[in-house]
Image: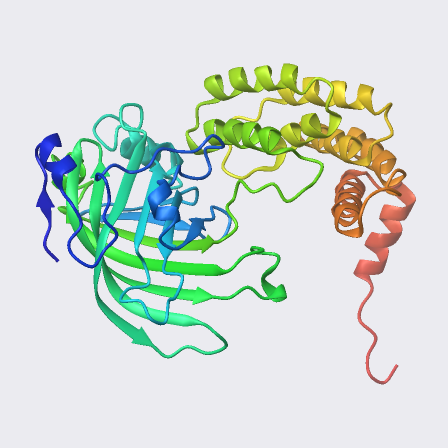
Length: 403
């Protein structure tokens, strides 16, 4: 693989894809759309093929790995936003990918240890405050080797050519990759409601070309490796599949989540969230959903229980304390605060109001009640007589085979 550093913005803007690829107007990665969970794809690319959106929840990983003398650092981000454009007629096409781009929120990269995360994301590392995203744009493909597929599936190995931007470094890279396309089946509905595209690849760069300090060989090695494993779907992650939720409401909720989870900026996120509390003041369902995002989404560093309580108090007023979803959220809030008795009480109320919910909505509410009751039971001291009887039984010898 050859790697070339582009040192001028003019050179970057003038770089065009080579013959046989989608002609891009420029080499800029498209910005995030209103929801923050997709990219604003250029119109001309929409006309050239079928768009597959990277799904943050579908096993998507961007991995950065550095092996130093004393420390192996492996940082993972599951919240990549991006897309790939595949030909409408894949069988007749020269390449399975006509265009593509992705954005990686740097604050969402996690090593798993606080000190290591701080070193990676701090000013001598990726400097997340100044450079909040790593980006990539696909400029061409080559060396496409088709593999046998079954049941309408397509698979191939190829090289992805493109430009990776880390901090102030813009690097031309070649990624040995694999692409698999899987038509939708009903067995896939828990993952996506659209056709699936899996893109996986790996590459390496000199660590100094990643904008990382190489002052200490003990803590950072001379080469940094990258892996991508993206699950992509024809149904974007910001598609509104619930008729109770308008597109505007969903976009607002996902923008809140993007700020809070992906960019780990609670001050900005909750300031925006308070605007949404006012905007959704008369929408109990939207308020409850907003609260549950804070309570249940993975990778949120600060869960503001006061914010959640404000949302749920209003939602409960609007529904007169009769909505199972809101009561279930109140149970989760009590659980988050360590109040098991309150969690059980609210969850029991929620179970009493399941008549208007579909089975797939009612099941997790019943399951939550069982969890809270089991944990409460485990913490409840047994009466002395019952405890003594249990101890006596445990002390009895096992009966022999002759007995």
